[in-house]
Length: 279
Image (cartoon, rainbow, N blue to C red):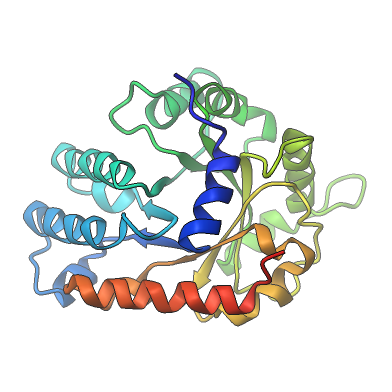
């Protein structure tokens, strides 16, 4: 059975649980700070603690696939279990994989994260469009079939991104705006929110682009990277209510106690509610 479209599920989750995404980023340094070994056992303990502490209360959990992949098949097994348990507890899972390729290879990535029969099936996945937006079609089509979402890199917070994302095309638009215009077309007519989102860094200040894509805007950079929830209205303007603020280390550094993780996530969610109008 196809799920309700991701955009509708995300809107409901943010309205009921608060507009916050918490990353699951098991850096070696974080494992160490939690008193864990940088091995599969430490990875498993870290991940299980985060899921058990937060999956029943935050809107979105965002595992960073690379930190699991570095342990090979055993790390992927931990990731599979985390996805399953987080979704069972009611959190939406956004797989931060940033996949991008063409043709059958993009189709294989889509099958990995967006096919309901896959052990890594997630509610949404991040993708890179810089082989051309059309290269994402297998992922967009697979997401539409399964009721999942896709977040497309548009304006990322890393300084190097600007040399590609702010480059202009023949008609004078920044490449990021070209991607955002594609997203708006994909989301046309969707209500209450489209299922094709953009990744736009919360640290960017004035983005200089039109963010009205009728879809969610994943905003990394809250917390350790320097942005705060109070910055969101300035960065995102009229589109701010569709922002999904993402924080990782700002919450994770409060482990390994589950209560510390919950309190930190709760504080960030409350700050976002204060900063972002409800309508």
